[in-house]
Amino acid sequence: MPAPFERHRLTVTANEALGAYRVLKASDPGGPPTAGQFAMLAASERWGGGEDERPFLPRAFSYARWLAGRSEVPPTSDRRRSHRSPIGGEAHFLLEDVGPGTHRLCELQPGEGLWALGPLGVGFKAPSGGRAAVLVGGGVGIAPLAIWQDALDSATVLLGFRDAAHANGADLCHNAQVVTDDGSCGRRGLVTELLEEHLDEEPHSTVYACGPPPMLEAVRALCAVRGIPAQLALESGMACGFGACFGCVVPTRSGYARLCVDGPVLDAAELERVEHAGGHTYDSSSEPVLEGSP
Amino acid sequence: MSIDFCGIALAHPLVNGSGTFDAIAARRVFGQALDERFPFAAFVSKTITLRPRTGNPPPRLWEAQAGMINSIGLPNKGLERYMAEDLPELARLPAPLIVNVMGSSAQEIAQLLRACDARTEIAAIELNVSCPNVKTGLDIGADPQQLATVLGQVRPTSSKPLIVKLTPNCADVAACAVAAESAGADAVSLINTLRAYAPAPPHTPGAPPGPWLGGGTGGLSGPAIRPVALAQVAAVAARVAVPVVGMGGIQTARHARQFLDAGATLVAVGTESFRDPLAAGRIVREFSQASAC
Image (cartoon, rainbow over all chains, first blue to last red; front, side, top):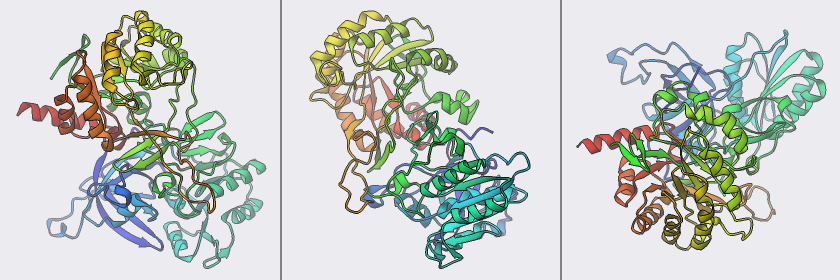
């Protein structure tokens, strides 16, 4: 389904802490996204004026959840307490405060405005041939896996975080197995170790992954060796989100692909390897290009 | 609000800056709404070169104070595939088509102009002269004499209106505009992005500082450059008789009006379209409301 040809001003309905993250919820008059799709977000007020007078460009975020049926107009007496949109649904986005754009978005309070263009991009495709879905996430990259788990009948969810505070983000998904870098929650180790063990037992699987580039590269290499299909949700700084700027390209076997229109979900087989764009750390894979500070 | 621009009838004075809107990708993303609500009075395509270009290695973007730096590197499929694949798609747009081309020698440019001249779908040609001359290494548009020489050689190869997209990275942009006019340009457009540098974040301890952008340097655009753009547009408009297409950081109808007041005939929206694909539609609406008052 085509995206609306205009950004819309959504109303923030909630901004909730989830461990080291925030879950930003907003009334969304647009249609439901496909899992893996994203929106370009910007605060409708004070977008700019932060560190180095940034942010200026909108930021790309995967939909983490989309709740339909939030369409009823609240009774007049409830209006002060409810900021729900009179139409559409409610979009959820997972945020981590890692730079001027995410910092401003993390500040937004219920009732405030959020510019959103979306849903954009190509999302996940369902497993074929009776394969089981295995969802592998790292850090803030778990966002598109949550909405994908909502859409699937069943899935195994394996998540990695740097520490216990970030591991609270696992609550976005259901029945997730968790590892942390420091062992403060779940097993100490890498999520790809969990994946390896799981695929030993269930090789008839399709892997869906989102997270920092080193994790995605490890998932890609692991699945390539075993001949297991994998779909990777990649990330790049984007100026526009609709194919205009050519800023978000990643190298693929057939040349540069624009992540915004050809992705953000790419078939792992299309990639020689997942490149490590510089300047971001394990758990801040969100908007690495634009959110760092030079 | 309708305007005669080099003999082309335009519904209003707003167009897009070359390379800031991909109508074919936008049609994929937004569907029919792209054509139904097309915001530009004419569509300026991204730069086409004789041979295909892959563009610069990423990272290609950096966010600056009130703007952005891009180092995209003019990726395009080359003249042949553009004409065969893209032109029929772009000809379906509800607006005249201006094709932007770039070459590194008069011979290359002449070849591009001849190919455009042969196609009825193309209303006008915009020549990007922010390209190093293979012979001199200097940007073709950075020196008035060199610009006049190259234009003099290529002008006779096309009878279509020729817009010269001037580079702001030169000593005297008005002198370059005068040279373009004297060599047969039917219009000039400015400003292109300002050459800019973004240092890499210090993410690797001990690593030497270097450029963030894969292409080394890039071009600064957005509201940060608007005062520079207004100064250059005014300086050029004061010296040439041909129409001027003004651009640089336009975000509102008020900004568009400032460029028209500075002497521009048309104005182009660029970076603001990245923030909202229908920004130009909003500006046109604001503009017509203001004009009606």
